[in-house]
Image (tube, rainbow over all chains, first blue to last red; front, side, top):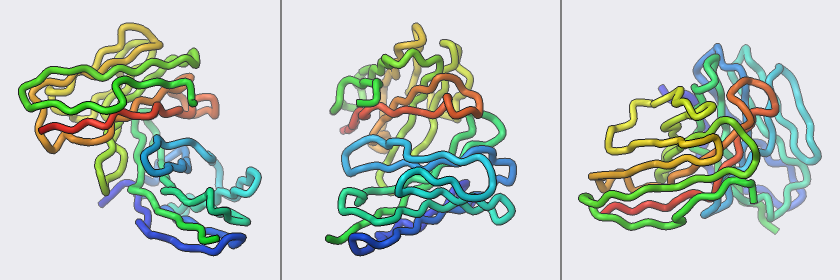
Length: 111
Length: 116
């Protein structure tokens, strides 16, 4: 069983729509949850992190965490073509050094 | 620019070669990391250094040897690699290794390694 699971996509949405990216994790003891964006040929860059159940909003991005369901999601409102990238979900366990990434979901935002 | 630099950006080496990857962070961070990113696979954490002390080695083969001479520099020494070691090697740094927001990781641009 993978530590972090993501649908590889691609997920295609029209410009201006809401993109919803999902991630599940296996370790119930996980403490911290992160979303990274990775453009082709580039390194990952942190978009958001969340520690507590519920929603966390930052501009067009909203991270949602449900620890009971072991589920974390990222919503991108008013999607732009520049949002087209691979989105990586990462989960950190109780030990700081247990940091696991999903394989990523490729998002295509069509003009 | 994240404040984390890596050299070289691209490296081609034979299985009998010895080479080193270099990472430098200009952020004043205390923790540094090596990750491996292979095609179609998740990022794999290889090594973690905190205050120049190695605190994690995720069952990485001994042909990969890390070195952290100070909190700003991290090396990955490579020898007798295999073709399956071809991947993007990413360095990251963070303020610390605790759970807090200040300890988020910033990645360098990576070294694309090809082993022939």
